[in-house]
Length: 218
Image (cartoon, rainbow, N blue to C red; front, side):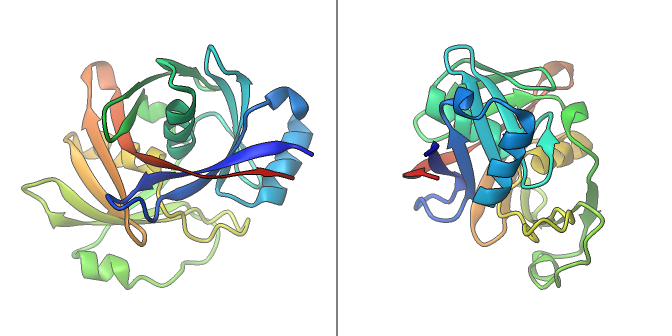
């Protein structure tokens, strides 16, 4: 039986919502890439992380169908769990820090796989969007309050892997922040919250609340 934790990442202020993340603390229990992919598919979360070195923060990230070089909510969640200053992922080294409420990561926009950032005229329009057909990774967004940097967003991965809509997506928020060049407060999905800030040298900091949901065996 493989033990794993379930976290909720980018929760609202009351600890609700956020995106579920599976974390296998003993990555050595499932060493092969094909076995990890099969396990992530069986769990069915938008992402599952395998921790290969907890002290150095070495992790491996999978969707139900893909291995990812970088993803936002898995990095934020694992940084919260391990309490390490950096994470080592396939794409490079991610900075990490925490304050009283939020866990933050610092990463590069060029690490994010291609996504379509699609702006709409209002938050109401974003909230009313129907589910698009699979094929294109779409981050739909609109200003709630442009002067305050407040945004409403929804994410549609389009991979046809059972995750039709992603409740909270740090990588897409990172891309949008890089595109707009300003700090953002993003309300995504049913009630998740993501906070971002551009940093020097093209880096973007992404933060949110994390809650421990369960420990399980599979």
